[in-house]
Length: 115
Length: 113
Image (tube, rainbow over all chains, first blue to last red; front, side, top):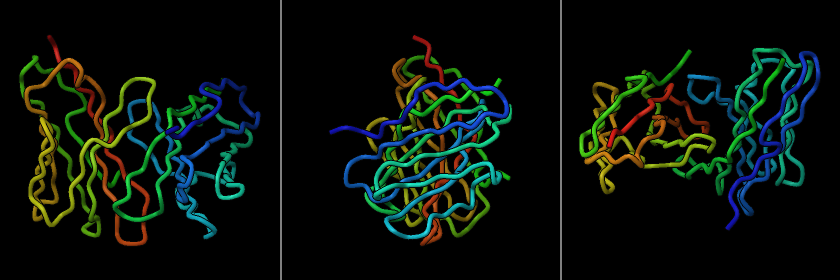
């Protein structure tokens, strides 16, 4: 079946602009996660959603970052007033539910470049 | 502050050789330790995972060794093949109720034919 999809695959923007990154999880997966991968670094947790529960936003680096998940499916990560340090690959993952041993399936990521 | 420390940053191995990647953690509440493999332009994919009540887990040419008392775990890739050339990330999750993954910085493995 279809895996996690993300769009766009690449995004180039100017400093100060807002961007929206989209994630389509695997159908039926109730948990959705966003991570950020900076050059030469591991993945950094940003936020996760589980069903109708309040999202865990503990990894968001600043109030310029926000995310929503509509209808328990598609999620959008929004970065306002982008800065050059926001340049990274943003990865989305989903799992059947937010259970500790449930595998997280990752999408291919969106490469964001802030000029 | 990275909760999982991974080494080396990169390694080169000859075809047929053994690749070894090491990770260490501080949070004793972690209780799930997966390894992910990532090819260029792709998202990470789960390779193998271990729970702390087991000291070793093997799947094909990939083995995780886990030392709970030392808070260390490692990935061994036996009979390394050129197709194994990728970036490998160790990760940890827990405690119960905390489902996000904490990742190491990654190791780029290059297998020379």
